[in-house]
Image (cartoon, rainbow, N blue to C red; front, side, top):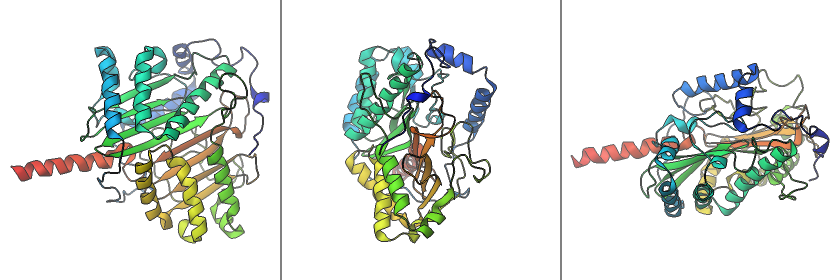
Length: 414
């Protein structure tokens, strides 16, 4: 799928909003801007709410998730995490290591604005420690998942170079945290987040949860420099459009929310201040997101298989065995899965789609420029996310079950 050229939208040299300044200077400058103050102020308020989970109607559907080994690579991940901890100073441990039940799990965001006082900033630590961080990530994800993560980070450097802002946006301008003590049995996990990237990974024995995840890029490909030829999110974009076009006219009319991403026929309050058309972005852990669009029980079996193939693109970050278990969960709720669409159905035109069921939320969104100058959404700026509705983002429902089971066993022994 060919894409529109982003080059006409690269700002003149020295004219970028972050040109020639450090990440700390950039953050301090933007925090004086009223719009940014509103965004971060709203996020702070949302963080104060007790965690409940994303729902379709406000009530949690119980008993959707269970403690069952899924073949997660906990042993290599534990070894990698232990190696990292052994390299950290006491001060670094204090900044980066939290209890597994800590609310810091929810304190992530995907902007380039570096305001956090916690975590290990990868471009500010020594290279052996940075390598150890990335080895934790590598040992937790599938090979393709690690590759996708690296693509996002490298495209962040591409953007930083394009707009003369390498101190603000580079391959390593990300924060890393550990939660709980790395263990083969007890809950623990890690978080990596920054511009266009957020990964939240929890292990409980041989079971894992990778959610929420956020991946994006502006631009989505590199046409020169050390990463020339890198091209991200092609499959998520292509398969999404192919699935929409494979539907009958009646099915498309049911899926379609609006023909335009900018038009006046969008539902009220649909465009978000910081998230474009995304509804499940940073700090939206308790959001009510009603089902919209075409239901899975209105799809033929071949169409259901095509939808599952699209979902698979978002599960590819998981190692094979946990991915298979996750896809099984999703397939069991296929009749209650909903697909909706906003925007054009023409090739190389921007669009948004969402896949939502009791156990999965997936969003794909073409965005307007933030550092590039296009004022309307374009195919060369993409945001994607996945969440686990009804209380299991960050593996929180499984953590609850683990400790309730442990407490029950203690009472039995007493």
